Length: 250
Image (cartoon, rainbow, N blue to C red; front, top):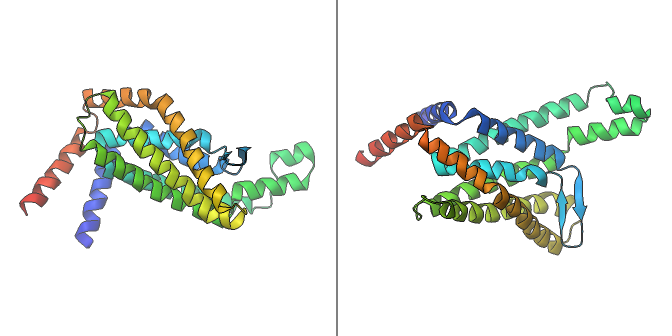
């Protein structure tokens, strides 16, 4: 067990040194922002309800698709877990600071204590929203990385078509898992959603998020090709190949 932990920590260390910092930063920031923006409703119809977190949820999935293509599914899952841990840390900071006695700037603009309390409640969040979003992200990240890698092993990965098949299939299923998990844990139990609303809002929301992936996936594919041409992350990939070879010969 100790040796396994040491190997995984070493893997993380080398991975973080090799993954482009801009992608890791975008991943982490998008996760924090989409969980904060999820407190506001974007629009709501009978079978379609989206929160403002939808505007950024596709960013993390596109980053995962790029990481899967270049570094593999396990690496993408590890970066997503890192983003999840940072997001939980940010949530704790938001919660702690929302309990301080100071006033928000909007209080001085409006003179309303209700506005100040509402901002504290929004920024501080509630335990079930944080729990639901964290569980949803964990499951959807594992799902996305697993499906993307599974399809990647069965495709040539030489064309945009192959990248699109991997990305669209994994994103659609993983986004549905993400929406469904959050809806069951939070919306159904605390917001009074019906089972029909839970299912159809999760499904239609996944389609809308897939649309964003379709629009921006050419950019993600172009960046991943540049990584390959510039041999970005080669030390990590060599490290993984050595580990696989050692495991196979053991």
